[in-house]
Image (tube, rainbow, N blue to C red; front, top):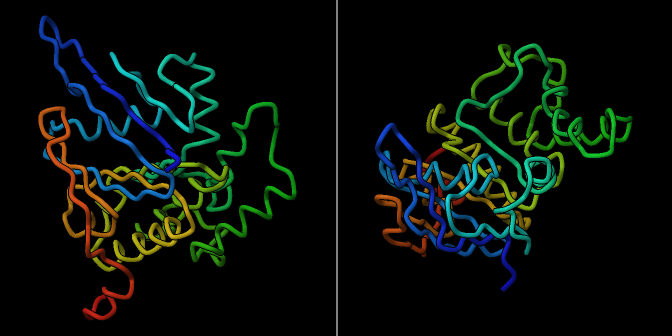
Length: 245
């Protein structure tokens, strides 16, 4: 079993005045290639802290984070930035699109941060257009975020996350701002990416959304409280059969 990522005895402490807050207290998890994991837990359980560390947006106090066989825990800021750009795709609850950019410009944004490469060429632009078509936005290339629904904005975010062909997609409450029908559309897209072999790790507080994953990791007080294997998973077909959208 080849691992896409692995955390070993991961700890994260924050200093709040005289008090040390231990957000993670020794977390060890293996994420095999092609995994689809829902990280669950109440507020303060450590799930968002864990996702930030997996995304290289923060550094652990102790422990190791191995991504694609490389320990990224001790990397320099520049090295970590390159890893984020090349190996990780991010999807956020609030979409994080640039308001003045078109759909196409938002999707191509990660290409501008590739190390050693400047600008976006014609082949890049074609790939962006193809990605927009893939997520159902082929007719919206020149639209700006305010002209799109929440679901359409999240589709832009998914397309943007895929542009550098990342090894892992990290989704932070990706359906948190969406209605149930639109959530199903977004989860169908993520399920399709996972079926193609993409590793997906998502944080969610919604039990019905967690059922789309292969397994659930439930956090409590900074540790892994339990793991649940979804023996029966939600799929586009089961939603349709139940009369959903």
